[in-house]
Image 1 (cartoon, rainbow, N blue to C red):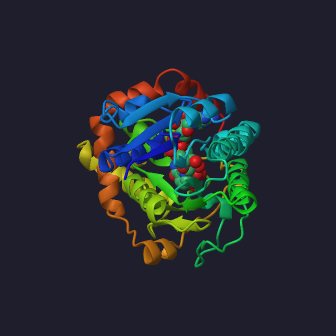
Image 2: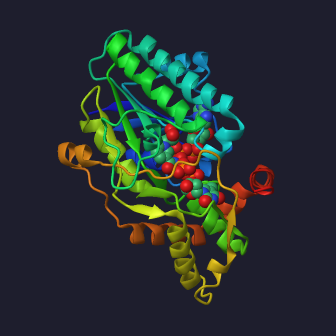
Length: 351
Ligand code: NAD
Ligand code: TYD
């Protein structure tokens, strides 16, 4: 069946994998990538699909109601997959209002544009909001986030995402807009901007620069390969029940310090360095304020009700990721030139 889907934030890390998957798997669909191209948005991420006839790029801000109106009137959009956001916790600590504006107000503008365009004709429509497990806050060892876990965000980033979740639910409840929400654990994989843990460590290992581990490296994250997240989004978009929330995760918890050692070992072998060489670069630095200790997702609902499963183990996914960075050093050079240097200096100089 023909469909036109508006994907916001499609030039970012996860969004680009979602766009690629939809463009390749559904040639009968039209996929519109609506992205402002902030520091995190990069059209190079989509160079392998940008010539396909079912792909359209629109440079636009989710805060720009007029532009959204124009796109909704130009195309017959029946589905929205909303990924555009400010996504980095450390940046949110320095600039919380930017997170509230983009993630909360931006989401409301997008909801409103869809509501105006669909005008109560909800048949065949879907507004899918991509959220994060971070809205649940931190969870003690032995427990897991389920869809019933109360929202308890702890950082400006997660607070802005939690607030946007509430607005999406409110549009579902108040106006009967057919909404669905998913909350995923930490992603890793190709095209990940090197401000986040795994790509930052890969970049610094390559450059033989210090590997900044916050605090004692005791914090736990639950890692999922980005293509598995894109597959889960595809599944939920097509099969998820309206009004529901789905957790997405691969049951793959790692303490930061263990993960960094593991990555160092893998990269030593790929780079033909002697074992232990990269680990010597590990440097413990001042912790992130209010640093959530542990995230751990229970994705049973998605697995049992919709049949999704991760396709790779962490070992396989991490090797694919490292191989991608090693063969795409040009990409890494592009995204780390210019403004990145200033960012790195500001964020890490006094840690
Ligand atoms: P990212 O920072 O890599 O990409 C964000 C994209 O949004 C960029 O392309 C950027 O240009 C675009 N964007 C930002 N502000 C915009 C605006 N005002 N208008 C239009 N486009 C704008 O983020 P990501 O890691 O790919 O995350 C995507 C989504 O998934 C986010 O909503 C995030 O909260 C969520 N999420 C991320 C993770 C993770 O581990 N990275 C995990 C769970 C959920
Ligand atoms: P990050 O990739 O920023 O994701 P999030 O904070 O959204 O989980 O960080 C993952 C973990 O790695 C988190 O516990 C913070 C830690 N971390 C470091 O120790 N050093 C770093 O340089 C970065 C960026 C993160």
